[in-house]
Image 1 (tube, rainbow, N blue to C red):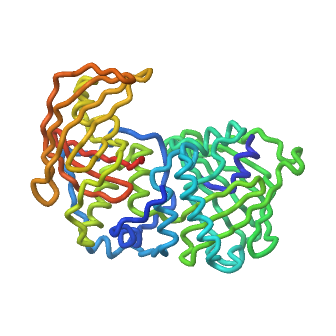
Image 2: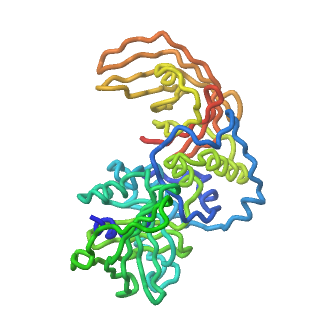
Length: 405
């Protein structure tokens, strides 16, 4: 099973990017060890409903600037919002990713990428086409956002190696599966796995993973082709001997870091702060509520109301923004039952909307049970593009939604 993990070749809608995205995406911070975990409601960095937007332009200017090409932006845009590194991707999302991957592969990128020093270093797994295949380890580690998955590539040493790493958490530790590597040609790495071990933070020694690699013969061998390596050395597309496609990055852009923080349940407001600061520094203001279905993935709510109140206040489920200022809240309950609440919104100034929700019902099929409920609140739109929306609404609670239609 560890061989399946190792052979991943990895370490621990096709809409166009919004106008704000290319500029924001080009301002990056080195973040080689980002992680993905299950979504959480809040993190400990939230302070009483207030979000401090205090990062100065100087701090932004001090970061390393990594530029993405238009085609690379298309790939990142297609990957945003996909959970489980592809495991939960819809057919439309998979099609968008494959289209973007093929476009980059056609452009070639760095010639003979394995011969370039840019191939070396630590790579974070962003997407794979086979996160839920037969191997229990592969299903557990790669298809679950709770864990971080990386790959280290070091070929220019006396002991060339490719190491696949699953990081459980900063507090727990990681599993590292190592392979002796060699270069076949300018695109292909040959490898043979020879050792694996757990490194737990609470133990002063490593725990060997009990897999007899030497007895596995050809099952411990494989190859990995790099079909695209960006000229910045930041994006890599690889295809493995099992027909799997991998997308890896050394550096992630601000929206990716926000989604990663939400998955880990750690430092979410800092990631929001970073994205809003970059947006402000670039002069991006006056966002509009975009039509579509928006799924809530995080809120800063600290006190839990009743289930019905949470649903009516937009603290769960999805929002459907319609034409002519119409808004619907939709929450799946159980066994086909849904909570639905319709209302309207009007823009009061550059970023604030007055929302009135007054038509609530419990729905099952064609039947509905009306609920005598009404909610009025101001919705402050802090950031929005084709994929992600950040708002402050009921009781000054922060919300992050992703577009799912």
